[in-house]
Length: 256
Image 1 (cartoon, helix red, strand yellow):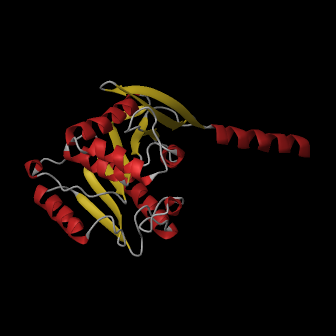
Image 2: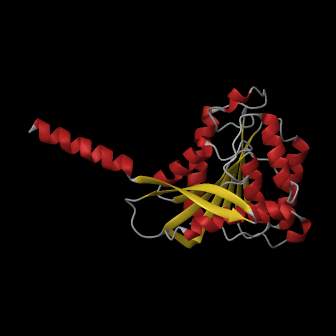
Image 3: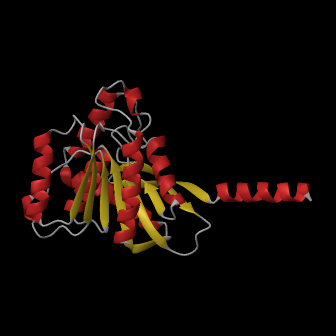
């Protein structure tokens, strides 16, 4: 009896673990080859809301994939997009900055790269097209804000310790996605005047937005490996990490 019970529990445990599926997806933006990753729980039947995940300035590394997997564990279909092409990843700040600046220099192209990832999310065939969102970290946080400014077909965007580009004046009264910004008060990468201008421009645009600020939290506060880069401005903050993830979940329940 104990043997069969143990076998049943082992089978159940393996089955539960195997429920989260990962699939590498090759796609293109212009002439560039991109390599993203799709995650879903195959125990969930039928279509469900989908979430695009955009990586930090390091590229589509294991951290971004981990967050996409965590979203799949919550019951969503998640797609971790490749914003640099060819799956480029680095741990060197100078290289990361170069790649990021190459993308952000062309704002329209920047938005289109993100939208290409969103299209792969929809192409999975598992997503309710009317119920999608986008989240991003650092560079990815700014990327999803740019998506909202171009009225990408998402219900909402969530920026985790992202740069805060201001809403364009021409988008007054036109920003449809709801915006949630999760920001570290000790984030020295984003000057206080930038934060103030960002908020003011969202108000002027008539956007539906919310900004949660976490005390003593620096840039990169959600990433346990943030301090490994050797940059003093980067630091993990466990409390801010957990609270921001929970706030995102409530936000998704609201918009979906």
